[in-house]
Image (cartoon, rainbow, N blue to C red; front, side, top):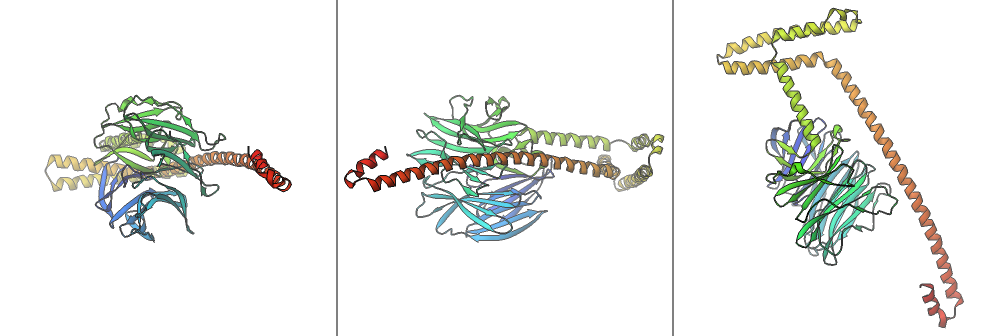
Length: 521
């Protein structure tokens, strides 16, 4: 969810394009950025007097947007290839209820929508609802009803690899603010009836956050009031456990101070926690999946100015095994700056590649022709006919490239005598023409590389499915164990009921109360 009632989103597509989608003046806007995170365009997407909204991206690069308007209309948008389509889902009663904290998640063919609502008259009771949609139908479920007071704090959600949903929220108990965990079973298709309090009831607790890593381990972190300071509490446990949901607490290496708004994410095999401390952003990292933590000293001079909190969503396949990010701190202007080693490394590599392209484009035509002669050495004549055709194709394309480029350079000189302008135009011309030439010559190789990449991706999916099958096997084993426990409990219960019946039947009324007391001791 968000630090405020409305989130801003960073969306990354499979091709590496970024979108910053944000709320401003009751409307939704979008900034588009290239692979190097430099801005391409800005525009208004939706202008409908919106109360709240949420965003996600599917595997086909379609950006999904759900929003509620001030008149209560729930409208579902899909933004794809610069076109926006919409569908009206339903109308909510905004005259009687207040709605907040919309959350959208698209997983394969399922759409998950969450929101919280409260009756305006009885505003201290809030209910979190979960809507599941697919191609056939929509189904609504109540997650939990809570009494946090007139104003509800954000709840946080994450999904594991088995499709289970994990949710953490804040509620008031015994006049203190407590943190609770609950979950949705994809196997049973239902939410747990008994949320678990994970915080210390003797103190107030704030700013909860939940994260499920790529190893299916659940991580919780929140702030607890310690005298006049706010200190972090961190706990973890596997999604599948035979220890009846026992949480493991790990001490974080932080001194007494005020720490707020933590975010957990996975980055190149490291778990990271980013958080606010006064006017700065600080961090911790773990190399052993949360069993121990170390201060991230690289953030010592990392000021809080202009760095804001964003929900991050991506369908980029290369990220799948390397990172997992649900929320992150970022600075967005004409560029996007993220504190994520993997994403920054990818951007750096892209920049280096671009620089190499520019250097190649500035080689003179003689050098390009010499390069071609080296490629087409006489030994190549022993290749099969298709190789000869490929060489002829390269010769023809290079001859065409030289002729076209010479003519275009003549055209440039005929238009102006400004040396700087001529130089700039020729450099641009050579860059574009060389790239086109290289693309034409390498098209066959690129096609083959693309096929090999897809096969590698399929192999990754097979490995992932094997891991999921192992997890499912563990779930089935756990369910069988629970079934045996329940069966034994039921048998004992039946035996006790029969004993109780016999006592009632065979005991005189005057002695019945004493007998019952003895039975229930």
